[in-house]
Amino acid sequence: MAQVFKQLFVDFFSTIVFLAVYVVTGDILIATGVAIAGAVAQFVLARLRRQALDVMTWASLALVIVLGGATLMTHDPRFVLIKPSIVHFAIGAIMLRRDWMLRYSPPLVREHIPHLARQAGYAWAILMFALGFGTMAVAMTGDIRLWALYVSVIAVGAKVLAFAAQYVTFRLVITRKLRAAH
Image (cartoon, rainbow, N blue to C red; front, side, top):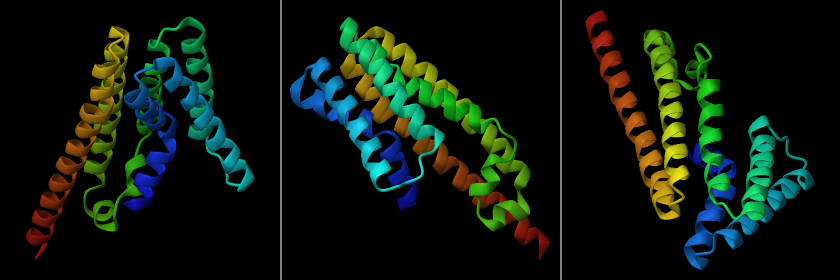
């Protein structure tokens, strides 16, 4: 579980930096500039450590530079606020792949309820698309405080609730199935 949170931190580092700097300064342009610098520094550090960079890392760097650059040039924060939407859409598209979730599931799930894991995988894809559209809608308002609330509380909360519901459902179904077999 710690590895999952570490990877999420790495993937959303520039967004976290952006939010932190914006909260401290209240200045969208400073926050955007620092987020771009942070993303570039993160990339350089990974290259110096000879770490393999996956597609999400490259995409995140490109999005931060392009959308952050558009924000700096136009003084329109909506460009940088849309970045999490694009990430949600990309992850949702990946989650449309059949049985992607089985790779991350414990053996009991793979053995007893692979069909539920498949359905849950598609449900996660739908959730990612919904959160992407929600983030985009909130970003279009230009209200950075509302966006920060949505990205840090609502989107994260929806994922936590979905994970909890999935865990409880899988546990109940497997328990019933094992009891019925005895």
